[in-house]
Length: 284
Length: 246
Image (cartoon, rainbow over all chains, first blue to last red; front, side, top):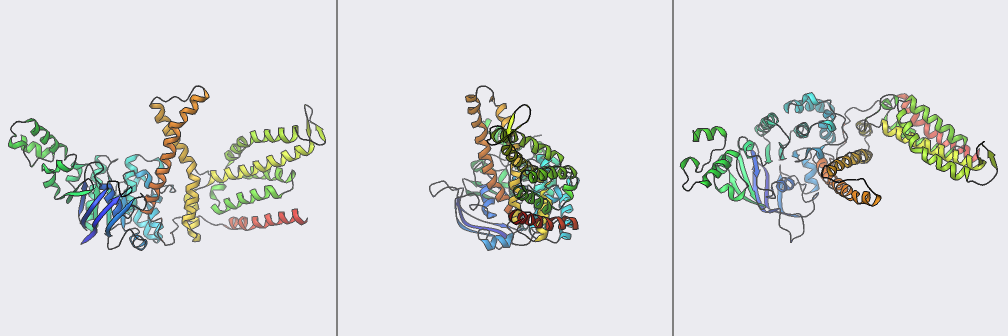
C-alpha cells in the first residue's frame, strides 16, 4: 500500500530564477518498508521530507508545484493537515528546536503532542512510558528536557513522535547525536514500526548504519531522483559515486584502493564489500 | 525558570495572576502616600510568607536606583513648604510624591517578580486546558515569558564562542561598541531562525490541532484560591468606589 506519493513535485526556496531544491520528483513510498534518502549536501533529501510533511514551502518560503498525498490526504491544504494531525512523525535534524519548551519533565514532553491532540488522559498515561521504554530512556522520565545531553534529547524527540504511532515517519538525520547503542535501539524501533505497517522514510548520510536497516534506497542528486533500488546493490556499485559523496567506509576504501591500481584486481572491483566482515571475507 | 517552592507554587496559577493584577491596580487606586506604602509592605510580607522572598529582594535591587532618583528629583529639588531632615531639607509634598511613586513601583515590581519566580509553565498550561480556554494564546504567553532566559542563555553561548575565536570585549568604549556587533548579529539572526524552526516543529507536535487539549495534571483549584480570585476584583472595585465617592 502506498503511504506517500509525490507527483512532479518541484520546490524552490526563492523565486522562479533560483535553482530548485526538488525538481520534478515523482515517487511512491510503500507502507511497511524503510526507505532511505541519500545524497550529497543540497541534494534535496531534507526538502523532500519537508514537502512530504506539508511544512515546505509554508514555513520555509518559496514555491511548490506538483502533488503530494500522504496517507491519503494532501498535507498542503488545511483540511489535509487537520486529517493528518498526529499521523506523521516528522523528526528534525536539530532535536533542540522540536522541544515544546514548556514541559518540566521528559514525560510531559512526550505527552505534549498526545495532549494537544486531545487524547484521553488514560491513553496518554499508558502510551508515554511505553514510548520511553522502547527507546531505552524510561529512566529519564522525571528529568528536565532542558538538562539532557544531545543524544538523550534526540531519543526524547523521537519518543515524542513514537508515542503517536504515526502511519508515516519522516526522519531527518535521526541518529546524528546518538552513540552506537542508541543507533542500534533506534534501528530496532524503526524496524518494528515498519513491521507494524508504518512507512518509514529516513534522510541520512550514515551509509554504514543505513545499509543494514533500509529496504530501499533513493539517491537524490541536485533535487532529482538519480537512483532507486535495493541499498546493497546501489551501495556496492560504481554508479553511486556519480550521484553521491560515497558509500560505506569499507566500500569507499575499496574504491579508493582500486583507483591506485593500474590494473584493478578482482578483489577490488565492484560490487564493493560494504562491511568490515565482508571486506575481511573478500581480502583475506 | 526554576519554580519556587512554597505557597506560591501551590497556589492555582490564575490566583497568582489575579494577585499581581490586583496589586498593580491597587497601587494606583489607594490614596498616596499611605496607601501605596502599606500595599508595598503587604506585598513584601506576602512574598516572604509564600516562599518567594528572593523575588522581593531582587525587586528591591531593581527599584533602589529609581527610588534614589525619585527622592532627589521630587523631595530634594522639589518646591513648596520644606521639612528639615537634619542633614538636608526636603519638599514635604515632594517627599510624599516620592514615597507614593516609589512604593507603587516597589509593589508592582515585587508582585511581578514573585509571579515570575513562582510561575510553572506546565501547571499554567494545564490550568488553561482544564478551563477549555485557547491553548494557543496561553502557549504564546508562556513562550514570551520564557524568551528572556533563553535569550540570555544563547547570548552567553555566543559570547563564549566569540571569545574562543579571539574577540576581546575590553578596552575603550568605541572598542567595546565594535565588539557588540559579533555578539548581537548571530544572537538576533539565530533567534529569528529559531522562531521559524520552532513554529514548524510545533506544528508536527499537534499544536495546530482543532481539538481541546487534554490537561495532563490540572492544578487543584482550592476554595482559598477561588475566594482570592473572586474577592480581589471586589476589593479593587471597592477601593475605586471609595476613592471616587468616599
